[in-house]
Length: 396
Ligand SMILES: *Cc1c(COP(=O)(O)O)cnc(C)c1O
Image 1: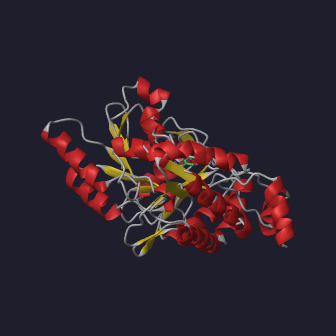
Image 2 (image 1 turned 120 degrees about the vertical axis):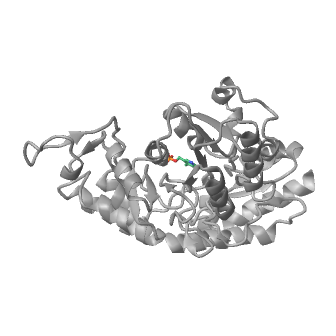
């Protein structure tokens, strides 16, 4: 057993994240392929109901990516020209791009130096600063649950009541996690929560995403926008129906639909969600106990949070990171950085953002390394990662 594992580990690059596909998953997909409907069939609503039930949310809209879900979420909240959306610089670009798709502008709130999530304290300061100077306040704030840890949602929700913004949780990393008494996705502290089902995320549909909400109007709007702005619900028609075939396009929507093939994979994966999150937490604990906190800084976890542990990130001294990266690369381990700050991307620099604007995020991005973490990461492979880190510490 050990011999085989070492052989595989030596022959193949160990990635930072990887999907886990079971025979049951494959059978579920094949079953749809043999059925009448490859898309818009019975499996999509089944998948939506199952995720909504698991997350204690009223409604779910499955789409072809989290990026699409973020876009629909912004549109459902009427984000448009003249509006501003705030998010964290330490995220995937999609958390910010969704606002630009709607013609709105983006601004950022720096991260907390310990949790590395969007800082509720910096958010409060920035809101107050903008309010007293009559600068624009955000219409929507997008807290990002970095690596699977919920942001300080209680505080962010109380600020939303005080300053009048809406909240979209970017929970692309966090399905299966919990925040106090609720599963992530319950939308207790937000208007909409978005999940990603990209293969490196917690569960996958190949490509895919979902928007959760408890508000029927937001749900209906996202359903309509997912498919061209078309409705088949006679209660929404503006004109007299001409027949049972009749539908109306009420606004300009998109084709953001997911397929039944993908939904079948997602539904099958969802059955293992709790198990996967336990496995991820167990592997993360092995890293935690093997790596000393003086040399490797780890993400602090807030009270009340169960992280889904999408990513395992450590911080090292910035001047040592490159050497550690090289050491990993030479040994066939594909470590990564999550993330390069969005505001320093060339596209965002063109919009006027600059180095020095969000110092905590910028410092984080020079120090962070994402270590391999996924359910099928073997203990032997994980030990190789740990040994290399200890070697790196002795060398530098
Ligand atoms: C992966 C990811 C997205 C985008 O997800 P897709 O399903 O690939 O569109 C958005 N936000 C964050 C934080 C992500 O990690």
